[in-house]
Image (cartoon, rainbow, N blue to C red; front, top):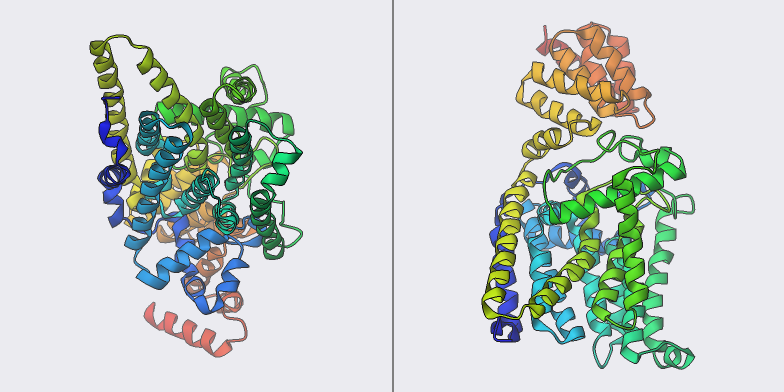
Length: 536
């Protein structure tokens, strides 16, 4: 125990985690709102009006058909706007502070449960420096992942107290699931803690903890009650998304299961071997697997079976292994696409909560190896090797997080790490279009179209390229293709207007303008007249 004696003072750990987090992710504070973050800005007025806070709790995340209800996350965005305004700095700052306290709560929880400061420190430190977390911490919309784990840890910490606060237990449970649906993993974790607290579970134990169990169940039921009225019966348990975002929704169950297992293996090795981390895994970066005789599928299957085995084997023998396995398994299943498809095929942000379970298991293994080493010199060598590994993770995370500071960095890096993705190629083309490099934009957008010609925004952007190149006929064809897709891009309507005006087809221009400005004939005529005068 002579190693890391400073662990006895909690405030020192908090300061250390604060310094380390801001060292790794500090440059993200200068980052902008990128990609999905724009939905936050678009809803700024509604979110910041706390005179209508009830509407925030009844607002879907962001559209009902997406099947997502996350009131904790929307409320946190609203507080950001209300207190700090619309600067992205405050949004990034809150993400970093949440990450600091998540790591600190991990340390406190493990220290309290297992009375082991070294194990607690290793687990929290390893979790903090994992490069796969960069998408969650450096990207503003990673807030939902952060809040789900933040409030889940508060729930577990509250339940681990000698005297449990009924109201806080229910509140933290609701806010955890309200951050993101993966927060439901706190329930099996709580049941495991209850068992180890009393060394058994029977009717008398349930009666003894009836108040605490009721608090948790009230929090869960209240979430699903509000979810039902927010999303409606059609979207309560259903998800609607495109083939581009989640091709697993459009394949058979057998293939979805196999592909999900392959993705689990990808998550696992990228957690501890963070090579080629990427912002996008949409169609067709991860091809659908139709054959189970695939090494990655079999390794994924092993990763599903192993925590089940560990929970059964170590249920009574090792609370650390059982809890780590429980957190990993039950936080992964809701985002796995195994039992039901979700809104996306894969994303490194999705593995944030499950990575806590893996961090606990790996840290326990490191600690056990350390205790088995029988000489001081060998212990020093072991500590040095682990320190070098953690330093490498720290450097990789610091380098990787910079990708999320601007859309240009994000989209161009996405095309490099996901060259077979319709979305990444299209986004890359859009950036070249903005920069005025029409030849490179055309090249990227054609690659996107050739992979699968159904992404309406990409088709529209290719139309814009052709329009600027003077290829009016080709541009018009692509605008209409964008509008014919299952998920049409409304911007194509706006782009058709100058195209028809350039052709001097005033009637067609007026026709499409009525979609943008219904019942505003005077405005339409004035706009057309002004355009024609400016482009004589």
